[in-house]
Image 1 (cartoon, one colour):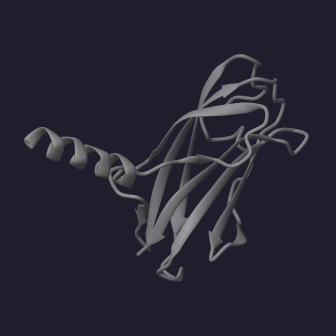
Image 2 (cartoon, rainbow, N blue to C red):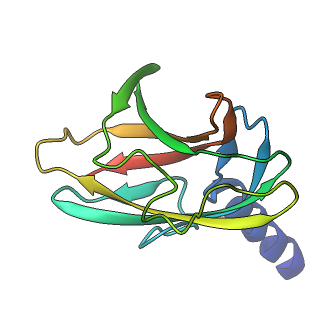
Length: 147
């Protein structure tokens, strides 16, 4: 009986844990996503207003990329809203040095300001790194809640 209870608890914890989803990666693959301060035992990351959140994404590249652009959207109630970034050039101040070589692994880092004016709402953060042809190197969805 105790064994059954332990297995049931582990399954519940596994099902409720945070999952980062691939939303259309084409020329690369993300192998690890880290959101600073995010409790991965929960089903979503809590993004506190009036703070800055740090992200890192480990990437394996299947094609060369001579330029990399960051594109971020927030999905609220199924509607995607673009999130303007101060520096969308992922080859500058992000840990990436372009050109990126085929078959190599990289770590992309970024910060995201969570403004005090943002509404307290559940949001699916869609983070894309696009190559010189605007193809998604990687696309990752991060379930989050703004508080």
